[in-house]
Length: 229
Image (cartoon, rainbow, N blue to C red):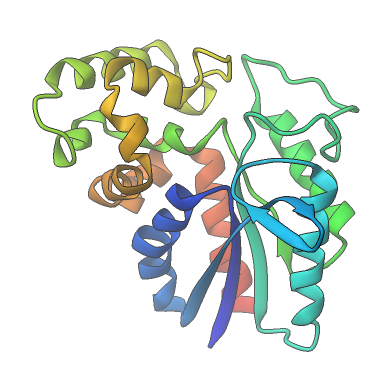
């Protein structure tokens, strides 16, 4: 059986991998292991979850890959938000993000990330601009996890309608996808690790892929690599 290790920014992404991604990839005879990304390392103790220093993240990924260097039926990937990456992240100093067309910038950083990690089995993915972008694929699905949220759903639909592509919802401190959701539905902030994966599962992978093309290309790349490696 093929194995896929996913370095996740936090429990929301881990839940997504368990509830949505693995049930899809199992048809390709693939199991998933999720790992919270390393945030910091101090006196041999690793704190996990959320972006910290890039060097800590790289060391953790490379160490995990090296431990499986004899296993070719293994792939490694990431589910990390483009929003909030540290200044020393590969490629960040060499490229400028166009807010009206952010995908080339995102892909340039992914390519730099892959080159820096330096293993052909590593398939990095940076979420445009963060996990919650996916949930704008169908705001009605929030009613699956929250009661009396019709006003918030209408607000999210209005936000999605402002953008030709929901992956362009920007990454400002107050206007990032999750910040907009919390501004409309403050209960989401304390429930995101549970509600985030549940809502995505309710929406369904097909619709998520249809509305989020960069995300879809990542899934397609994983499918192709799993079947060919």
